Every structure is written in C-alpha cells, then in structure tokens.
Image (tube, rainbow, N blue to C red; front, top):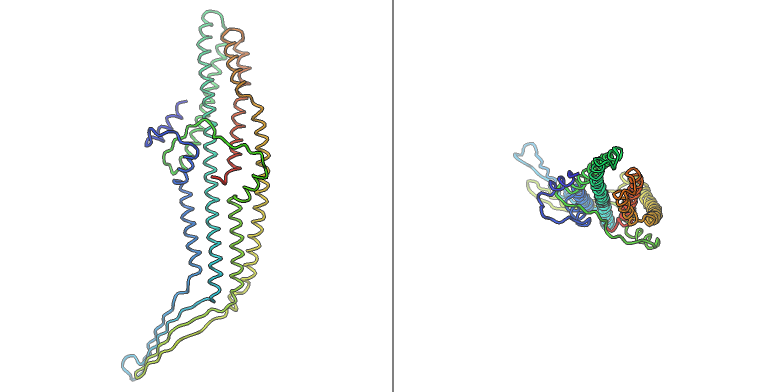
Length: 391
C-alpha cells in the first residue's frame, strides 16, 4: 500500500519540496514538455513553409553557348541567354489567398491535436483523483479491520467471541489488501502514462478532490459555444475555405505563363544584344484540373457538414448523459453512508451486532460508496469533454 508513495517520491526526486500540482498546472506542464505536441508543432511549421514556397517565382535560367568554326582558332562566336518565367500576375494573388487559408487550416488542426492531448491528460488526472479517493476508503477499511481484529482476538481469548468471527475479519483484511494492490497497480499505470505525456519530466499530483465545475443547465448556450469554438469544426471550416480558394486558383490555370529574358550574341567582329519575350499555353497540363479542384472543394464542404452533424449529435448526447449522471449523484447520500458505517462500527464494538451481520451491512455501504465514486468520475469526465475547447 506504500508503493504509490514510493513511486511518487522517485518520480519527483528532482522537485523535492514542491507542492502538489493542480490539474491546470499539470496540463500547462504537459503542453510544454509533450513530445507528440512538439513534433506536431514542428511538422505544422514545416507544412506552412511548404505552402509559402508554392507561390514563389520560378528559378531564373542561364544558358551560354560557345561556337567554333573550322579555320578559326578559338571561339568564333557565342550566345548568352538569361530568362525568367512568371505566372500570370493574378495567379499570385489567388495563390496567396489560398495559401493563407491552407496555413490557417494547419494551425487549426494543430490546435485540435493539442486539445485531444490535453483532454487525455486531464482524464488521467481525473482517474488519479478517483484512485486516490478509493485508496483513502481502503485505508479506512483496513484501519477498521485491524481494530476489530485486535478487539475480537481479545474477546476470543476471553470466550466472548467465536473463531468464525475472527476469521471473517481476517478475510476482510485479505480482501482489502487485494483491492489495495489492484488500486496501486492502476495508480502506477495512470501516473506513468501522465509522466510519459510530460516527456518523462517529474511532476507531482496527489489530489483526491475534483475541481469545482460549473453546473450546466442551458443546452442552447452550450450548443452555441460548441459551434463557435470546437477545434474540429474550425479545422474543417478552414479546410473547406482553403479548398474553395484553391478552386479559384485552378479557374485561372488556363492563363498563359510569361517568360522574359536577355540575349547577347557575340562574333569575331560584332556583338548584339536583345530581349526575349515568350510564353506558354497550358493546353495539356491543365486538363481535368478544374474538375479535380471542384471535387476537392465539394469533398471539403461535405466533411464540414458531417463535422457539424457529429458535433451536434455528440453535444446533445453529452448533455443528456450529464443530466442523468447529475441526478444519479444526487441520489447518493454520502454523509448518510459514512454515518451508517460509524453506527455499525459502534454497534459491533458494543456487542449489539455480530461481526457477520456487520460485514453484510458494511459491504453494501462500501459498494454504494464505490459506485458513487465511479459515477462522480464519469460526471467529471463528461464535463471535461463538454468544455474541452476551453483547454
């Protein structure tokens, strides 16, 4: 039962004396140290730079041709050609606008990924809180079992208790030890996951109380907030806008490319200079590009519509489940359950209740307390999911 605290001490050796962090502290630390987030940030930056290069000028071309003639020593003449190609000017403006939306889409996708990583970390923190609460209850059960075992062993020696009652207490202690070992294993697993998300940098989290949450009653306000701030929706909207701007670019792809340059010719007795002006018509390279762009724009728009529908359905589902869990939590009287346990313990110590009857009644109370902890944990996770765009 002490393994949890040994692990916490080992993980936080470098930060000895640091206060236990809140969930917000943990999330901010993970945002700085998470390797996946760092990798995605670099990938996003690279993709944005790649988008910017798509609107660059073509590379200039330089050609130099020396000519040789029979009977003449050395070079008889030469030609130097320097050219620069350009797209039609309106294409640069269209591509610049398209590039802005592509970069916006990349930024929003990055924010959506960040949100999911932080939500996962927050859910782990909420699980750790529940495990700490369960451990606290198990510690109380073990303490009570130890006290009862000492009392009933003494009564057994005095002839006031039977061996079955002593054995029943011992079995309770075995059960508590088993549950505590399982709780410790789950706690270590969750903590290691949290540390891995933090880049294996030390952190401290030992809270057994959930953060205060805002009670949500107005579905319309929630719906409006989700539709305006959901990172997935914003990313899908940026994708649709980028696809629409790319369609505008492709509508101008029939415009000719322009090429200008400088030409210099030299011979034995004269030199000449001139300018080069030319162009190319995208007769073949432009085939079906418009159809491709229209299909891509339609696909992005349909994905946006689907994202809206999914967000609406999920929001309604979460709101309904949240209301049901809130009512379920109100049905549990935690104060009454703890008071009942104390009364049962007083009764068994006073000899008014047999140890067998005590554990029959106490087990029901412990099961209800465990059920309440699980319902409360699920409720907190639902609230975290509902407000995930605030992370």
